[in-house]
Image (tube, rainbow, N blue to C red; front, side):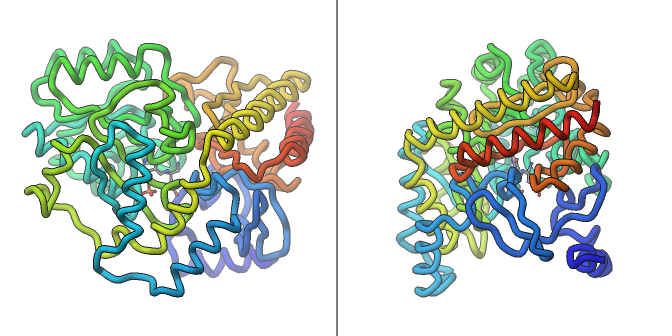
Amino acid sequence: MNKSEKLFAEALKIIPGGVNSPVRAFKSVSGTPPFIVSAKGCLLTDADGNEYIDYIGSWGPMILGHAHERVTESLIAAVRKGVSFGAPSPAEVELAAEIIKRVPSVEKVRMVNSGTEATMSAIRLARAATRRDIIVKFAGGYHGHADSFLIQAGSGAVTLGIPNSPGVTEGVAKDTRVSGYNDLEAIKTIFAREGQRIAAVIVEPVAGNMGTVPPTDGFLPGLRALCDEYESLLIFDEVMTGFRVAKGGAQELFNIKPDLTTFGKVIGGGLPVGAYGGRNELMSMIAPEGPVYQAGTLSGNPLAMAAGLATLRLLDSAVYEKLEKSSKSLQDGLTKQAESAGIPISAQRIGSMITVFFSQKPVANLADASAADHKRFGKFFTFMLENGVHLPPSGYEAWFVSTAHDETVIGNTIDIAGRAFESLA
Ligand code: KE4
């Protein structure tokens, strides 16, 4: 047994599934997850000294690559000043201002400790503001593991085949409706039937948890119009897309103004973080300004604020131009290699979020994503890992390109993928 295998055997005895988040367990691909001991730039190093080009990117946060000098310096400086005060600190105000500067629909923002906390708080606020109970989500949409969302959920839930988790009570599930992503007619039917009871629609403006699935033209504007018509709130879950797909997130890219937005990942630069925000009239309902209670011991933690600030402040337009170029060349290269190997794929991308579906046709929703060949993805994943490229270990996830993935790294990835596709032919 190598070191990762020994560590996994040990972990399996004392941690559920040997991991602290299910999707890391390689359940839908074969083999033992490498235990990572360090990372720099676009490279991961495991306990046995193997190096991998990393496309997990910590599931989104590492847009500047791992251990970026400026982020590391900010973090070390913050650590030296003490790690948590339980009192307001200047960095919280600075990060709130940075988010608001980039996202015009957000006038006030509250920091929390994860994307899950952000989305569960946003729907509590939406229910309070509208005095309605029903939340509409989309099949394959993943908004963290709060009860209301574990109904036909994506990411690890769909990967493990438990999109509807045990432990979620009928009482909770009854207030969640699930519609089809990119299917405007379906959600119009739900609204026609019970629109007066719908507090909010929560949507990933670019789905990233059933693989990368862009919104079709008209889908997001259609959701905006429906919410306006029935006075429901539109929540953009930008935990993954926020500051990832554009400087102002997906709402800038698609020019849609949601009522509430949730954030995570990039705004913490790899430290535990989440946030939710919107117009003042809504956010002023949050305690202690208003009656909607939400709290957190480590919310606004100085370390997460320092890493998030350092990251956001480096994300200028030039970074997004660079990411667009490198991610497009990866997408084009993968498509060409698969074509020459005679392997049908749909390489789908928005910005630096990309997914290769082993599918004859484009993937527009969860049914399409589920119909893709996930066994073939498993084989592809294993070939890539054995040849030094660590993809997310599920066909239902987005790969992330960082500014540290330079032309040479992208070229190497494409070459290895070419051999991987050949091995599948
Ligand atoms: P966290 O609670 O994991 O910080 O955020 C939940 C969440 C909410 N909304 C969106 C759009 C998300 O993508 C996520 C979390 N993303 C997954 C990756 N697909 C986290 C990976 C994991 O669960 O380990």
